[in-house]
Length: 473
Image 1 (cartoon, rainbow, N blue to C red):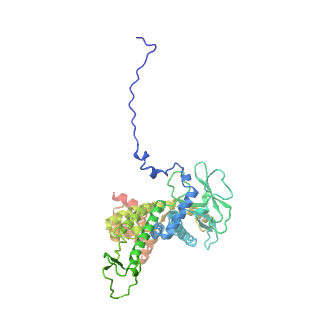
Image 2 (image 1 turned 60 degrees about the vertical axis):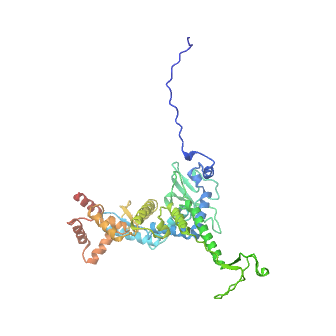
Image 3 (image 1 turned 120 degrees about the vertical axis):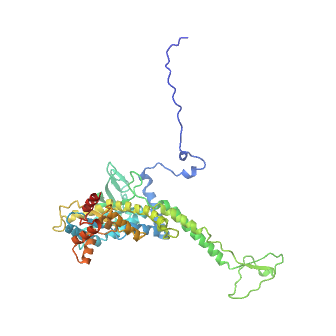
């Protein structure tokens, strides 16, 4: 048989492999659990309406729930504390001391540490914190100041349905999604009298603190949003347990009878109340018994339930249970230190974020103005080399921590400036105080320290410590 055309045999293709994720399946069992999922963008998912609802509920819960209030205060205190201190890193020690002194005088006058503390608390509860630069008269020659605003005050002006260009709830963006300017309402929307206009502030003059969980996210949502249902559950369970215990305590005793013959039935009604005389011997009708209501609340699981809820609540903030609950019962040294490592790492990440977004920006504006004042600031230090020293964390075991610190220094794995910085101290200032207390100059004091540490005089500056470590290797 001759075919009208030739056929080329195609190689057999492998059968397609069909694979899937269980989480991608929609069944009768999981349909209710996943029904609120969406495909909204970051800015649409965190719309002004959503953020307003979450923000108001978070504020309400923190104001009325002792655990919520305590967790937020503890996190704010541990992160900001008494505030960061500037340490200049120029080669001239006298210049460093002079700049640090003038910066601290200005920071104390504008209450920078207090404003950072409030901003951190707002960032945790509200989801974001705003501050913008203003000019104000101070005792210091620097007129720079910082004004905090709540999240509601930065938004779309009431007089405009939409803004020109890319805009996300009052933030004007460029083509790459970077903030260009912010629209700040002249009054808070919750004030009695509201001004319906807004001021346009350049992004360079605004400090906007929030946690961008998704790419393209322009505004922040409360950091405790995942825990809000648990906070409400914790309060409801506590109130219900107290109500049950009070109900049981209100019933001093119960009269009942199992006899078919009831004495004086016309004198006793169901659920009737009978007053009891204090410290008296009572008699009862024949066939009646007196029993006391057994109080079963709080139950034995009450404390365990509250502990589990608090533990789950604090997890969204990377806070260990003993810090959130202020209760370290059942902890030993090893478990406490292990839990604190995660917590302290989160605080270091948060402090680094505050340095990049807030402190460095404020310092740049401060140095820019200070350089214009004759004799106040060296104009050649426009880009001031510096670092921020935060309050140190209290060690769990001071003796072991001091021993570890000594070992690191002897091994050349750290330096005196680095160790002082962990405690939020300026190493030059501290060594100057120590030398003065011993009645010797600071250079002699440093030589004595180096002689004790390395067996020979050495430079204890960061560069000198690095050279010492290389020589030991």
